[in-house]
Picture 1 (tube, rainbow, N blue to C red):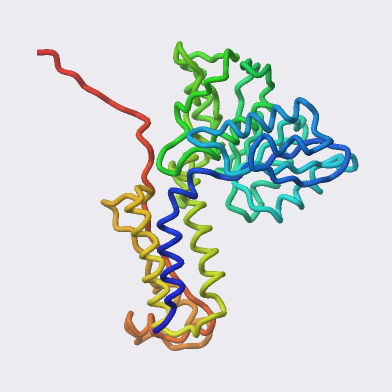
Picture 2 (spheres, rainbow, N blue to C red; picture 1 turned 45 degrees about the vertical axis):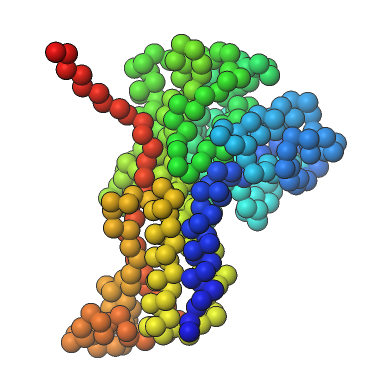
Length: 354
């Protein structure tokens, strides 16, 4: 009778993945006279914040517009008059839970340093930045559309990042932001088809007009330099959102229900694996993981073998099962293979006329 709560927690976490993925949390860093943090559940909550300007209220309204649903909440972080740079705001953000960050009043000279901070931040979250030319990471959304005119008013690229952050936070885990309509947009500086293709290939998130309405051209982040470990999938916002959710779910559940609470026996390792597998199986049922692919988690035999060698264990004649069952002190070595479902974005239809 081991780890029943771990199994239950993982199953519950998998079962609520779609619900949780529908509404993310947006953080907005704003200029202000004093450093403050406010959590807003809706736009009405902004009425009690004295140092908000009328323009800043518009940024909050843009964020709450969302997409399929509005964000779960919007966190306002005021820099304060002493914050000539963003160091203090960054320290505050590091202690908060959020999914998408926007800084609608950011100056162009501060964008590069924000890219560096975000790239090194050990959190599963993303930032929407204007014209982030130095960015090459799945954690930065490089928004570049200019001169945006809406029914609410006119906005610069920087200012409209709050709308993009809210839209991405309100995009369910089962769809992408590609072609998400922006009904309030009246006009913007449009690009030619060739210019749009080039911008997207460079990792830019841009707006596109189909002749009737404005849309997100394609839901991509700033990541462009693929490697053996990070391929084309890392360019897609939808895929990265699912990756981050899965990593965060497993990490949080292990920390809350497993680490330090059970002996590190082979049997307990197996029950933990079974619990994580149940979570992955639930994500298949929820339409997040590919049902055709074999989504599995198991003991990482090679890592475990190398660890045993490092602590002086003779593994030369040990069979694979012996490696799996060996005492690894306080270490657990697991590996997993999963395939996240993308959204339908490119349709090729060949029609033969008889």
